Length: 173
Image 1: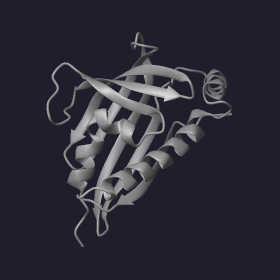
Image 2: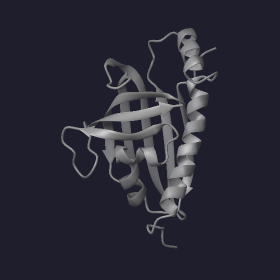
Image 3: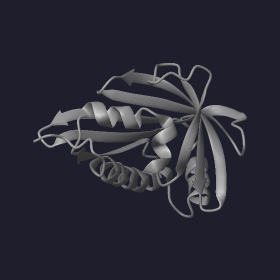
Image 4: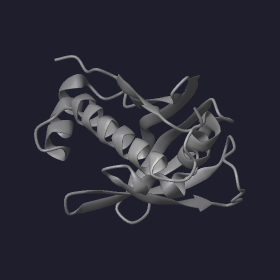
């Protein structure tokens, strides 16, 4: 079965694009709403705002299994777009390099606040489909990553909405 290399979903959040961008573009905060990510450690120059080239190590868990990924920010357009690529993985440290995935968040102003679109792209293009599908089903207990990430994106977006709308940054109107 051929792989689906990208999945995305959107949600409207009742806060401004600036507020959503500020939270999502800080990888340290991601663990607050992601079902797998526990947060991140920014490497090197830790500025207040994300910037293209910023590296961070994402700390993740799925069941009892934990791992770390090395990520690099590839787009940091204030209030519009935040994107990073995952390019190394390991248990405690990301030692195994390779194209893994790209995560993207787009922010669009709407009357209700902000439409947030989260997209996951499978960057494992050199893997034969049968190898990737077999690995995915073992790693996710029976799912291919596109289906697994579709569910994770839905959970992340719902949690992000609940977290941001439960703060004093609500969108006026």
